[in-house]
Amino acid sequence: MLKGLRKLNLRQIQWIIWILLLGVNILTLLHFDTLGQSLAYSFIIISSYMLIIYGNASYLIPVYYQKGRIAIYILASLLLLAVAAWYRAGATMWVYNSFFAVKQEVLTAATIVRTMASSLLIYFSSILFYICIHYFRLREQQEAMQRRQVESELNLLKSQVQPHFLFNTLNNIYFYAQRESPQTAALLEKLSSIMRYFVDEAPKDKIALATEMQFIRNYIDLEKARMRYPLQVTIEEPAYIETVQLSPMLIIPLVENVFKHGIDKRREDNYIFLQLMVQEKQLTVTVRNRVMEPVKNNPQGTGLANLRNRLQLLYGEMYSLDTMIENDHYTSVLSLPL
Image (cartoon, rainbow, N blue to C red; front, side):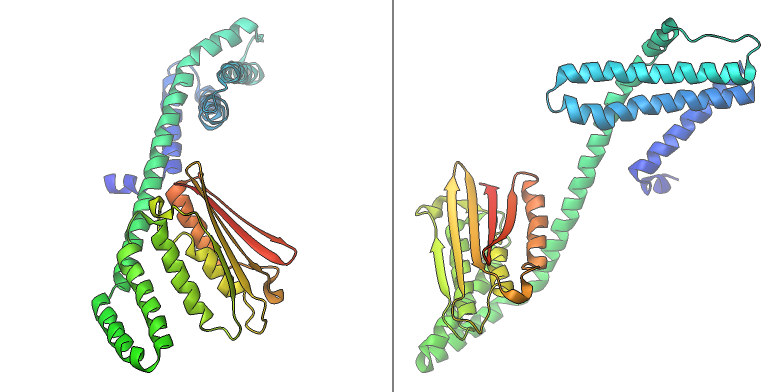
């Protein structure tokens, strides 16, 4: 039975609790009323409880209290209690007068006030309900982040099959290529540096921005070697990037996106502009390139979508990633805290 309960999600647990409360309320009222009255009154009472709890926990607290609008929150809470009391007392009176009364009863303000007072305990319970829901949601987010981290680590381990063998092989090829073709040797050296970055730097939580930029330069140089015409590359960066730390692999998707969607190998005017700015513990990365006609309506693929998912895990709502097309130029602007 306990294993079955663990498989229930938060919404299913809430419905079970409400059904149990409804059943308890019906059994309690059966000592004083008929079965029909007990069912009707219990439904009205429990639904008024739900109005108070969900109205406060799902709307008033997030919209007013958490944003510091305390006065409005208090007034809205009193209004919520008044509406719930009016609904509970009025609906109960209507059911009684319509189906069970010998003498018609009249709804008074005193009845609504007494109902409001009796609902105060439910109102305070809604605060506890909000705290519990918030706690369980945080746990779900943490568990999801842990699962993604484990999956990333497993994927990383799979990609690290015999890295020393690969490095040694590349070094041997580099030794022979250096005698026959220095240009090929230089490309092999850059490829080896990129592979070493993936093995040594990518798994870290933080790396130097200078290390990240060297990785990006090597990547651009290898891509340039595949192009028929020269690529104009402009990189602007602060002089003190050695002291700047950031999570690895956050800038390369923007650069990779250029070579996937912003390069036409038949043209001679391809370019990539990369600018890094650090101001007030905020890093801003701007990448610009020309928009190619075949992909003008969709100049980005899954790379930027995956980048947004990773940024969301790392920084929550503290980052921004904006893309724009203006005068046949595609610009990506990434801003994140350091």
